[in-house]
Image (cartoon, rainbow, N blue to C red; front, side, top):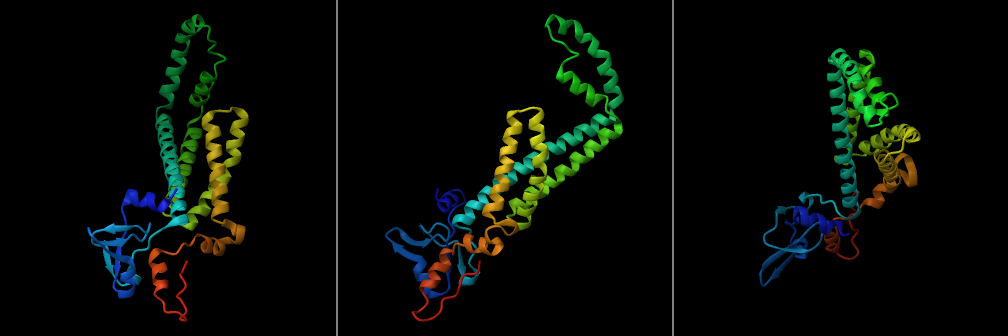
Amino acid sequence: MDWNLRTCGRRGHITYAPDEEQLRARLHARTPLGEAWRCLRCGDYVLGRPRGSGPADNAPEVMRGRALRDAVILRLLAVERIARALLILAAAYLIWRFRAHHDAIQRGFNEDLPLLRPLAEKLHYNLDQSSIVHTLRTVIEARTATLAAVALGLLVYGILQIVEGVGLWMLKRWGEYFAVVATSLGLPIEIYELTEKITVFRVGALIINIAAVLYLLLTKRLFGLRGGKAAYEAERHEASLLEVEAAGTVPPGRPQRQPVP
């Protein structure tokens, strides 16, 4: 997939007319339909006036190539983390509300459960051995302090997920480190849950989290892996089109300005 063309198709092209005449000529073309300018992201010529102009040093920084692909993947992870955070925070709120009406719900459960026994017997369903009833009984009979601790724990966990999602969405390196550490700490719990019961949701969540950790560790070269940050910056840097064309304007024999990662 050409990530440059894909992004231009969604967001539009980015054209810029630099003040430097020689560089301006390399990005400009005249056609029978009018003037055209090269997109700084995908390199295609776009009919019409440029979206911006000025000194080359003031041109917009355009993410291209591998850096653009990585940004899309990280933001997909960020959306997944924020969506999970919203579900966790909703669960924390419901538990806290349940705690406020704990006594009334417990009385209603104890009073209504016997009324379901005749119907359950006709359906050949054993309420006493039901895992659903057992789970409900465990939750309902939990102490108020326990429910408050669970709600608080979910609240903290949800906030951490939001912080992780924001860091990934903003493409910050601290967000990548935070995501690896936070996700890795949760993997043993997810594996333990699979030993109790295997569900599609649990297996899917475990696969996503393991893939996210491996992707961040290896592609972002975190914790010094594969050369660390310096090697990552050197690998990911793909010179912008403006830098490429500016390099072509340097007279032979004169040292070219090295792009800054």
